[in-house]
Image (cartoon, rainbow, N blue to C red; front, side, top):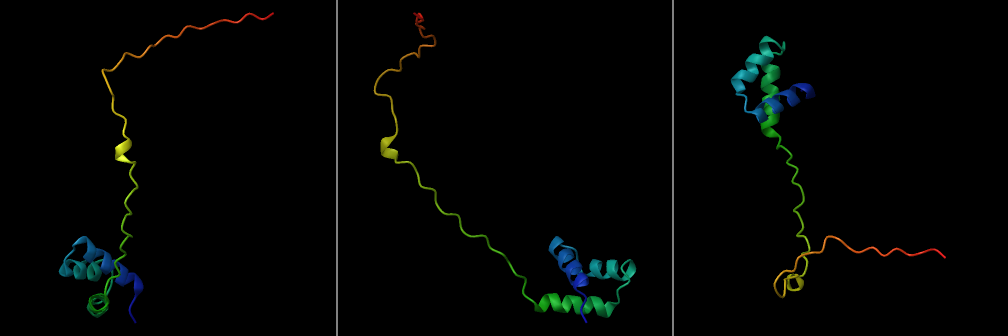
Length: 91
């Protein structure tokens, strides 16, 4: 029976670009797996298509009507930075 942890490990290593030889070496020397276990995992991975999740296509944003953009109609005027404050008297 195929071990799901072994399949996940092999699939992850393949996705990272690790060579098949290096994966065999890692799993046999430090993982304790047999050559037939690893071969079975590779056979399973190669015969099973990888599910690719494709995100939905972005929808175009509605743009603000370009015909209503503000454009100055004449020379720019300086902005007044101080305003006169009127004080009211309390009767």
